[in-house]
Image 1 (cartoon, rainbow, N blue to C red):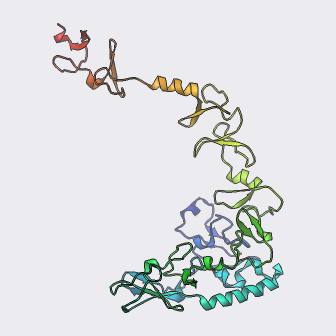
Image 2: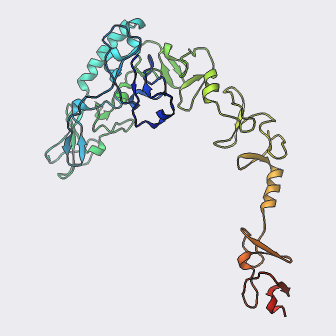
Image 3: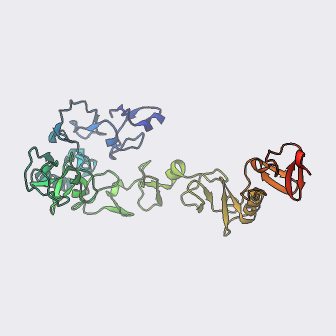
Length: 381
């Protein structure tokens, strides 16, 4: 297996002890950082040796050809366009791990070749309309394209669009600098167009040409690719769960790599263990010991619980804490007490409100209550 340096723009690789990309033997992702191949500055090349153990990755150092300029929108030359949402392995069987000679899928490989040939006939791209043509109508918004507006054309089907209107009819990705396919007079990206006729394996990201496949939670898999995302162990007939990226994971890997920690006992919560989520960041084992009041330690199962900072409280402890924190209102202005307050006789006041009723000076040392009003030492009579 050949490895190449990870793209420096991907900062998440900084946490790894190495900075390399190594392709999984059949998944379209790095085996180290788990991120997709298209997030790395690498490209797939066809392997020349028979039956390689792994795909060979080669850094794309080819010199980019100049872009075609047109008013405000820049169009990449068609032969230089990257197939975003139109992966190479949808067109080249040698890049498909599910169609190697070892897989025994001879008939399926032939079906793939015919499918790719038919799609190549309708694969299109947008080119700028260099000169204004009166009467053009945008196939996206169905409005006339004014003489001073930009326009582009899907060459094979002779359809015109405002650049902002040329989006996939299903996923809405821009198709200005993408390959596109037209079906029922609507433009589609490669992935959405292929989905009209074939299911896609959620494990290897390749189209499925088999007569049978595995379906789990509205996603499809080659039978041999219904595996744990981390250890590749088969999941047929076994319990499994999903990680945050919505990938299927065996219970063992979930516990070691993905499980949330209980806020009380600091132990990982197994995927098959009952739990209670009190907030987005607060998870607890559903036991009397873990889901309990942080003050009196009574169980909160089947009881009303209150969040206090990062801990839980029962109703009694929460009300008692709120009562302790309630300082009341200022005897002078009537507003809630906060900050520095003064207690003078039976009165509690904000520091700024403690002034002599007669002269308005702030009360510091000698204070007297005369008929319920505050007086300084000079105005006690």
